[in-house]
Length: 292
Ligand SMILES: NC(=O)c1ccc[n+]([C@@H]2O[C@H](COP(=O)([O-])OP(=O)(O)OC[C@H]3O[C@@H](n4cnc5c(N)ncnc54)[C@H](OP(=O)(O)O)[C@@H]3O)[C@@H](O)[C@H]2O)c1
Image (cartoon, rainbow, N blue to C red; front, side, top):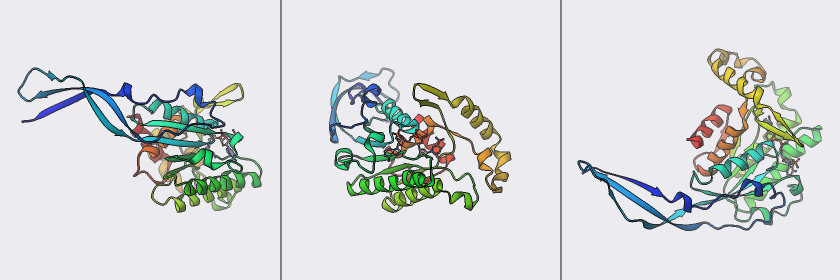
């Protein structure tokens, strides 16, 4: 006889995520670790058997379930993308039934000088948003070396997953891809993929839009980015044949919302089968999985 069950409850008993207001104070992390643990919560179940009209409702029962705790370290967590990742993780913490503890690092915890012991012990994933523009030397150091240092530290501390925010190549000719920005990014990517062949994640976004904070100001990049993404996606079928033209993606590749990128990162954190290099399309798909 077919029987359907539905359960309710539990959610309120899951660990409440850290309020966002506290996250911003995590620049110098002195966060205690929360070990993976069994959670006990109370559920009420109801079932209806085929052919039986009335629901029969059970008394509440205690259930002990193994809920995996994620401890995610966000490098560059005070930046535009890093802070969106933190915000998304907090808002999705209960929904995905996973607890997130975020250690947010900004420049005050420069990867070249950080005491990794304080940061990486017990982490289940590291997300690096470290990157930037500047002189050739600075770009190699920030986009390349800083991330290489972070990947190696994560590996040394046994962190099982590393997620790197890299960049789309915009279909650029090779002489432009040899600039320090891209060389640094590709160096970091190689390090992730060689040290984490079965779990490393490289996300390659195009231009990222959202509300970018610069000091006390907010730049609404979404006012341009959002319509541009919609238009470029709508005409994608017509523009695809043009992708063989060098650098055409500078104009034709749709920009990515910072919220979608953050959700794709969350998907990477919780999905063990999600590893390798991901394009803008795949970032969008990964984000959609978490949205659901
Ligand atoms: N924005 C875009 O349109 C775009 C497009 C494609 C790819 N990306 C990539 O996405 C990533 C995030 O970009 P974003 O726009 O969020 O940049 P962002 O706001 O400048 O954030 C970068 C973060 O990295 C931190 N950082 C730099 N060097 C560091 C170091 N040595 N140790 C520790 N932290 C360090 C910065 O700290 P401070 O704040 O203290 O400087 C900042 O928090 C970058 O890798 C960028 O290349 C961005």
